Length: 272
Image (cartoon, rainbow, N blue to C red):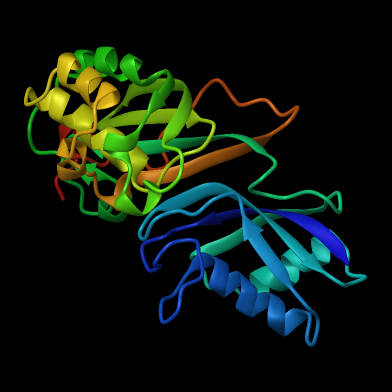
């Protein structure tokens, strides 16, 4: 058996998430279907670094593929992409150590959440449009309370409460980019819906409905409130997964461009 490391990007709008489920369309399932056509009759195992929710996207999900084959990684990549739908793409495939495990060996993961401060005709599947004015400085200041080891029971879905809800958050960074507010969250791992609830709570701080004190309370006590503010999946992207010895890029940016000062706009003399 050979093991390969796959780097995958996908638009999650049409899918129930990464993980294979009965009677539901998943990213993992589509890749498995393609692999079964390529490696006919062979035993195949595909495991991702973690699950992403329905509607959530990935700039670079990592998975391992285990199968008996003499095909080179580049050929596997090409063959998979020939069979995969347009919204799933294998960025790269490489030979991996036989003991490599995409989920168990992952050292950290980062997500980016995109909030649009204006209505967009094109970006709806990739942002959360907030009509209300948001106080960026308050959101940025409050976000620092997430950093460190905390119990995220208040931010977890009930399905995750049977296991440990303690998570180490390495950093939370907020950035303005044109009409977007970007939230980058880096952590050891994440609970189901946790990132979307973190983003939702920060938005409520920006709206003035919650305070830093409220956020601190959610981290120190079990509260049902964050669940009420779960952000929609459309704005969430799994940015990257790092393994031992790998370094993360210090900078991050938007996945789309919805700048209001487009050179095609009327502000620069276009008359339609």
